[in-house]
Image 1 (cartoon, rainbow, N blue to C red):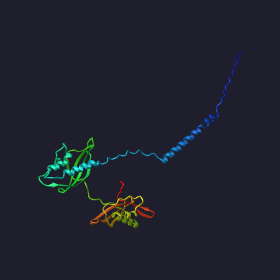
Image 2: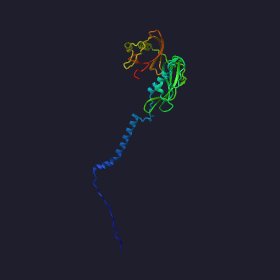
Image 3: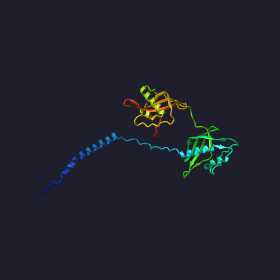
Image 4: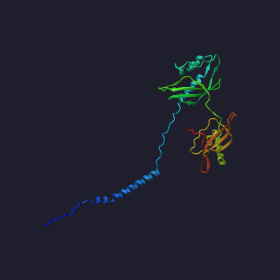
Length: 287
């Protein structure tokens, strides 16, 4: 007797889904591809408009000169080398604010038995910083008897801000120097119109004729006239600067007393509406 075989049929389930989900599932891959393409185009545009820049090294700001310390050193040098052998106490009194109890009352200078010396001018010509906060200034001192001397004066700014000498001064030699260096070879100015404008501008500049000079200046030019009025005698050389945006002029001029000077000027030039104009002469008064 055989066994009856029962056949099972697969079940079919029917579920209702919103139409927007069906559309989203079908269109989602296309949306993703479009979004990636848009992002790629945006990235390309960003690099084209503003490409990445290499990292820049931080700007190193140099410490500004300590003008008070320079003046302190210059004043000490002036008082130190100004003396009268007949009045040594006056020399000590002059130096008292500098030496205090840290050194001899005369800062180590024992005056001779006779004579006197006056300082005509002083100028700081060199500075070095052996330790943090300490400045060693080389001061040029022009005296009426010993001539030009160079003196090093060490100055420190204390925690409270006060200035003080560090040790005794020292006589030293002059900073290294050489003879004047001639300018490099430059192209001569061959434009007669430019040469005329430059000569006229320098003539009015040296004569301090602001009204006449203004006719040859650009609208944005800033020029500060010299206090010593001179008469332009001649223009010896007229050459282009290395960048050829300025003219280098060597001129001869004379003052009211008859003293003659050979002077060198650099003039920034620009061509405006077919004519040459001057935008600066030798220096920027705003710096």
